[in-house]
Image: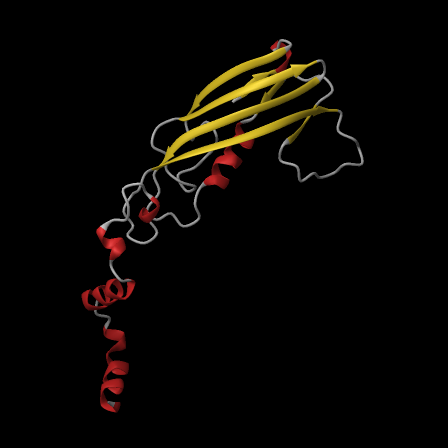
Length: 171
């Protein structure tokens, strides 16, 4: 998601990017995407002042945290960046994710990592199929205790037989 700042003309300049998760260094460990990551960015240049507004849209395909079925839902994230020349020496760290420091002679800038951060922050920590417009699946509606009982009936671990026998003798 590279922009050559030397080629910008005064006023607004629009950019459109269609990137893959690999282009933005997003691994499958982070999440799986269904299709491309589309970004529309408008850069404003007025004299030495530079800023940008953008929106990224994509479709993610995580597993439901409850039923483990793959689910698909859209992500739309908006952001604003302010570009500033000449970072002061005494300024070591800044917490403003909107502010991007430029070298004295601005050249090409890559906004891929910044956009990646916005996308990853928008992902739900615990995705469930209940959040889908179509509603939850049948397994989601099931009581979690029923699911656990089903799993217990299905698996038998012989290491627990001695403890199980003691428990049954007490009753």
